[in-house]
Amino acid sequence: MAAPPRVGSGAAAALLRWGGAASARGGPRLHSWSSLAAAPLPLACRAAEAHAQSTGRSSPGLAAALAAAGAAAGAVGFVHCPATACDEEPGTKDPAARAFFLRLQVVPFGVLGTRLMVDKSVRRTATAPDATTAILDSGGHGVPTKGGPKRAGGASKAIYTWVGIAEQESFPPDVSAAVIGNTDCKYHDYGEGRHVIHAYGPDLRKMPDAWDTAVEVLASTYCNILREFLDSGLPNLRLLPVSGGILVGQYQKQMPELTIAALRRGFLMLPVRQQAIIVGRHVDLCIFLEAELGEFEAVGRAACS
Image (cartoon, one colour):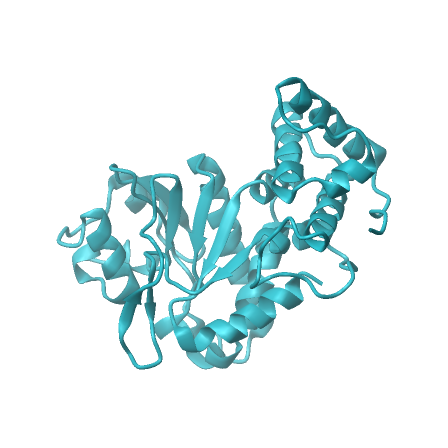
């Protein structure tokens, strides 16, 4: 196995020190770069998260350390990520983003675990979200609208039915106060293990022939989603492509590329400390439509390179 790229010694030392502490607690020991590279990716990510949380400061080499450990772990088969496994040699200019996309999984179901098949039937292909998982509701444009959840349709209606607010005419006060316009997001615990991040994504129909603008606004939205996920304290997140469906406008055929470009940029808007914590958690990009899965998988693979 090739040696990992050189990174800042402070980050490497921090990860290795954490590995030694883990060994003292009965966990595997990380005593050298080779053992760090050979460690399962979740262990490397937990090391980075522990360092970020304990020090409260950014480390210039931390993102590169994550990328090196992630690339090496994936190369030796510790990470089973068929939708995002990297076929190319590491070479990204954004090692932190590469680490994030190595962990991101493109999955063949929506946030509630169901899937719209090509024959228009809806099938359950995964379990419903559990108590450790936050799901994304990208219908935040309905939050400030009169009638609230009761007026919602499509994916948002299904989510509101799942959390028990489908017949209500307003959202919880904290959601209503926070989600007012483009890019606004708010996490809410609806009880009984049901966690939702409401996001107000842009109406792409109002941005024709404005790729850069669309990416920037969507990136801000994804950045705020990730911040709310951090604030939730939960280990798992089910994302979906923001501003898809009726809001997609002329970008329908470009939605996989637009989503990944904006998600990458949104992730990189976070401070390095928060990036490390996100990489230490589990994020799924949920694709509800069977017909769209292949394109999202292909773009997801490319994001690793």
